[in-house]
Image (tube, rainbow over all chains, first blue to last red; front, side, top):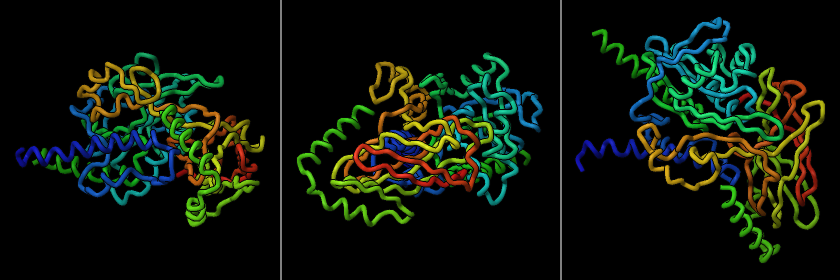
Amino acid sequence: MTGEQRSIAPRRTLRALLAVAAASLVGACGGGGDSSDTLPDAAGSASTFLRGVIRTPPLYVGDVELPDESPAGGGEPFAMRAGDDGLLLVYFGYTTCPDICPTTLADIGAALRGMEAGRDRVEVAMVTFDPERDTGDVINSYLDHFVEGGHALRPADAEQQEKAQETFRVIARPVEENGRLDFEHTALTYVVDDAGVVLVEWPFGTAPEDMRSDIEQLLDRVAEEAHKETQ
Amino acid sequence: MRKRSWMVLSAVTALVLVACGGDDDSESDAADTGGTTATTAEAGVGATVSVSGVWARSSPSMADAGAAYMVIENLGGTDDALIAASVDPSVAGSVELHEVVMVDGESGDTGHDMGDDTEGGMSSTTMGGDMRDGTMRMQEVDQIDLPAGESVELRPGGYHLMLLDLVSPLEEGATVAITLEFENATSVTVNAEVRTE
């Protein structure tokens, strides 16, 4: 094995481990006395690594446009791209989701509130799986509870919804239990750059400080790349 | 996943029955942990649970459901189970015991059975090849087992209490009294602190 190959392999392994860890974190919940709030330390020790998962090849989502029901959006189409040299965090969920969605959105909110600099370069968008019940007002006030100034995205029709979900490889299946409609759904958060490329994805359970670490590293990276381009 | 944990739990139950009352270690370990205010319910014949770290997530104004989390420690030498929970009707209509499970993509089923199509699913679009489609689902459970001498954590993405038909939003800083019913230990009422994170 050459040195080059060796330097790549541990990164891959780490990411695979992180993915497995995230899955087993969920799977093992309630099974024992492990009360750790964060992902296992395997990832934490390597400070230069992104905590999230990198998909190869990366997803391009910049062509997805959905109506933005936030006060700032005014129902106009919002494209899945960050502002210049910024980042866009995208989460798919629904407002009657009592555990997974509030947890993720609260973690995102905590990650952003803890940022020392660059908060204004990070935007958040939530897309609803449930546009029928999640009207503009509903999704907007829901998102606002966790993250102020986010983009509340509500597909206008099935076609828009399918395109968005397919592009992000998001799966959502309605599940009815005790007369209540819930969704079984992909629970990833996507970090998108200003070109509409997904840089990293956070599995459910990614701790706010890990999100913040990724955001800060990626903000530095996109700023460096923009600087190179202008030279 | 469920089946496997049931098997393990059955094994634990069997061991406890055989070794009935001989397990002093776990009890002394358990007494040292905690730190936060714990509510302990006592009943005869070693049926004792300790509940700590109780909290509920604040809910957005229009949400009709919320979730509560805690750590329940079975201090006794006998297996127990959380079988029901309730809140005052002025808070929510009902409380259900729930768990979140990871779902296999192709089968739409829970558990670790890998279908024949798993190989095909590990394309470049599947991260690490380990997450499949990574969907998560919430489902009701009949009870949450509390093996003798062990702590069980109810937490986001795992077991939790779901408060249904909220009468009003759960406001940050408020407290919600939740009554827990166990198979063996006597019922106990704990106060959940409402917070956003």
